[in-house]
Image (cartoon, rainbow over all chains, first blue to last red; front, top):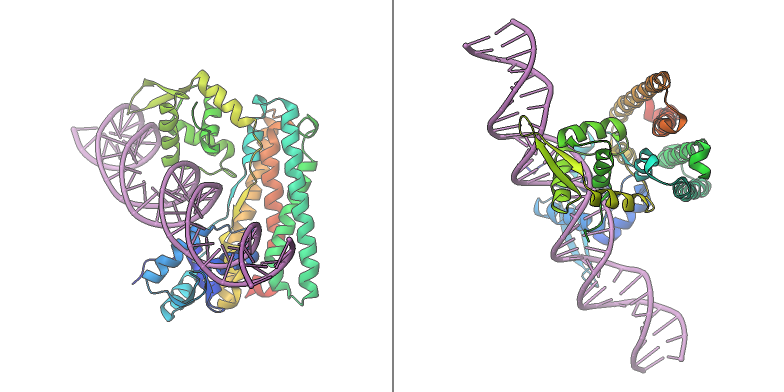
Length: 175
Length: 175
DNA sequence: TCTTGACCATCCACTGTAGACCGTGCCACG
DNA sequence: CGTGGCACGGTCTACAGTGGATGGTCAAGA
């Protein structure tokens, strides 16, 4: 009986259900599919793959060019993934350093703060724009509503954040 | 020249500007002030306090009852905090396991998924309600707009999330 | 008086992040 | 043709963050 999966390992297993992939591939697959709301790093991918290989949830197959090692799910891996999926997902975590800084606004000259705010707003506005584009492309590619739920989450989130920026008290926006 | 602060250590330093506190106090102060968008744990608080004491940014004062040790900022600590504050804050990070599960929806019986969705929606609706209450109380206590920016962020965020839940395709909401 | 619970801290294992580092095959361009 | 640069593919390490177990101490109430 292998120990319980963590969400990162589980997500890798999930992607491997669609066919063998190397760690490198998995990282890119994951970033594309869920990268905005589920970060993961190279180190982590390889760490989890090695651990799962130890536990027999995946097997390393076909060592290709440049140390490339594609992994495939085993039946045990499929079962572990199924079990992980059936547990209630944890709450989301948000860590937003800008809010930290705003909480200490009185220690900072107003102009500096306004500059931070402006830069962050620009980032969010750009992401929002990116989501709009992505939506158009996805629809053009024949995506169903169920395929757009994370994109939709992102759109709503970024919209809310941009509106929050625009509603900040003037002294935080303009210094 | 001490190494650069991380955001967690910096936030502790910030709170200590208002007077000496023990690790225990700091944890509660921080949870109350910034807990919803900046998580931190006991272990971390004590670890950072010890490290900052090593670096001379804080000093342990007045060992009180029950191993209680209140820490106070030093001048060096104030300077380190000021420097940390003046650097552009990093982007926010969001990790939402429910979105991960939704991305693998096709591997899950629809009813189970709908149950998860319903439970998460309830949590967010409750948080939103809590923010509304908190806003009323803060205003009654004479808070200025600038004191409400993080609360406002939370409110807009939770509003967006709840609306997202309500706009999910029917097969994800009802199974 | 005794017990329960809040207070206060320590420690550990695991997970997550960031970046340095290294080799290798591919391909564009001279 | 041949070579130099870049994308690929992976390893390693230090640090940061999470969660739970553990353990002692004081205060208040049964």
